[in-house]
Image (cartoon, rainbow, N blue to C red; front, side, top):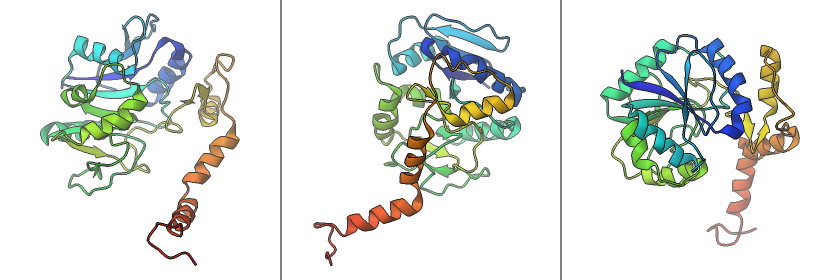
Length: 259
């Protein structure tokens, strides 16, 4: 199977490399594919990981294009350096999912995170389809990509955020099917969707590393305050979203009378 694991990173995030790889070794010791770490100038000394330096940073998409044009894999498993694994990867099941995708014209399989699929799909793994028009259809959580599909969506100079937004819109024009796990059944289980948010360590990642006996360099970047994270979770909760929806329906112009 012509597949590789690509860990997207850059030199300013190299403080996350060692914790990431310690957990990668611990929870995915039987990963059967070559593993590459994308960086600018710095390299990692690790027996399972090949460093891919791209030189001066040209932006997320341009860096990735450089690597894909250099390696030319038929497909890839996309990770980022702050996806800290917290449970054992079922390699056999993951391999079965990828083999299914390769034989059923699937272009993308999101392996963790959201959004949840919005369309049913007949497959033996409980995956759903990410329908055209779904927001964050191209979420950059851990995913398997057919390289041709990913390459068609990359625009030089774009950030990862651009890709999740504009790339999701562009993906609506592609013929390939996009599949994804439901958020409560990830194929790759890592902490808090990401260990670093807006340049700061997520508290859940700090707690995970303490439990695992892994040292984090907290002098290099601070830890996110729990208060704004809790407020964000509250805003996204189902009861709060229901209340906001009900209030919006009462506004003038909503089509419903205001009492």
